[in-house]
Image (cartoon, rainbow, N blue to C red; front, top):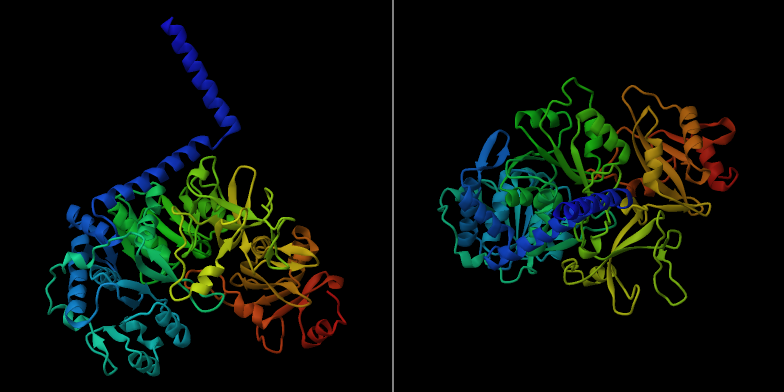
Length: 618
């Protein structure tokens, strides 16, 4: 009787397992990911009840548990968790005795990748200050805009960032009662305080703990600026809860305390500061910090420091693939990479060349209220809406009219959902669990990121500004940024898809596709050629005709030596769009898709005039 019952039970379990594998192939992965996310949220809540309410609190706990564990390795020098704690204490003591700062004040930080970035960050956090990370590539008006928007009372500048600072800018800040601190022993400017000469004169004792105490995890911890690709940078409000949540990303991917992370991204970016440094603190792991990314040094460093995980963004992996192949390309201990922006063709090439590294592509933004992770490592996907995703967040893909730049609605005024397999605007419902904190000093722009009355009266969704596609298996794919996709001859053209196709041509190293003004917007491609490879207009023509519909074929090509990118390795388009295809203002070689010649031919001034006048119809 018992044997029969056990046999029936075993048979039923086997049938269930096989059925799930056939009809719901990702069931177990979806379930495990959902349970892991729920468990990590519970950990944050449990820690909060034990007084761990911020990244700084978590760091202090790590110092207590493993004071001598290497935390940062920078240019061969090792900084333990205790070393970073004590030096950040000295920074806090300097500001406490000389800085006239009080709890809640905002201090802007303009520094490159170096340990002192972390020391100053934590030192100010220990005083209860809100730290604002500034992009050191930003100058003059944009920099002043950033400082004003976050209402900074002080600015800390690294010595090597002084070259981008104008003397008039310093005077302007002083006139506006912004105290300036230089991470140096001396200053070339009058009335500018220095930090390094004071560090040895103060104790490394902790400042009073009540200064860093957090009463509400939804209070502001820091400001991290968006890229500013569509105007001035915006100061995204990062709460203590958001910072702690972001630090869990590597843990969700299976990283552990024994891992060694390689970090080349700029620390002012949320990926480096919170997923990277915050992630190491969460794990109790070690971070190999680099001043800047170097494709030629990357794998040598990974071998030298026994790196096991790294962060990527944008075109970083492409630059690694563009390096000359070496016999030891697969000789390393890297097992996991986390990031966003790797294109499918590069993803495949990367794995084939450098070995079976688990790549966890994610989708998220600095100010966004949700995070999608491709936890199955499916090539090309930026995330997954598994069968349990409704327990994690509520999102939709909405039908969007690219030409009119607006959402499509039904006869009742409600938004329409995009069908499976078609691009839709990604929106995420704003709830207590998925709040949108907005931007500092700009309520109007914050409100513009919200969509109200989407499906029912009173609902609120965060507008990501991105077009995504969901396939029949629930995988999400990035299609394009709203504004990058353009419409030509009544058809929508996704610039990323066209870039992927053109990038398959063997003499092309890098492609950036965009729309330029001509009877609406028409396709153009900026191209970087592979070393010692000439441009072949006939081959490119044949390739685009074979693989792209006529409306998606770029009518103009611009050959450039170096592709302009942001500090986070994303292609810049704005200056290319503004310059258009005018040979009068562009000194680089330009080509024109000429169908009678079955080739891309040089775009001369005469041809340009005929196109603009309408004599040549496109």
